[in-house]
Length: 186
Image (spheres, rainbow, N blue to C red):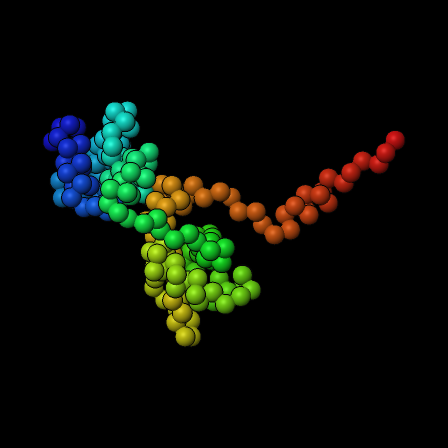
């Protein structure tokens, strides 16, 4: 299969799927190497960006998804009569941050870090499909583990979790100040 035909195949799969499709899955369906599918998907994404097409191909970790171009989001929303998704409250954003950085993690760990009950926030994030269950921890009580979803990456414009900004550790600033004491006036 030549590169142009592979690009057309990726385009057809992504259009039909309506959600992210792993490169491995497309490669298996086409009987080609995963790297060939990645190159075709990246080439398709670059071509659509260069042409300033109304659709784009975005990468979400090792999956690809077709979506409308960001500059048309308002008109698409009006045309499809969709409402803007509700904003995240401060508590939900804080809960989501803990899960994103410490995933997979339990609600109890989120509550321990936040210092407050997080049941409502976890439930709201599950409903908004920004987090999902990721199994159970192998300890007494078998608490549910949570992790972020591809919708989280898409919502925050990330290709992978590696793009999250580095987390500032508590007390890090104070340590830096102690290591570089101010000079005494002369």
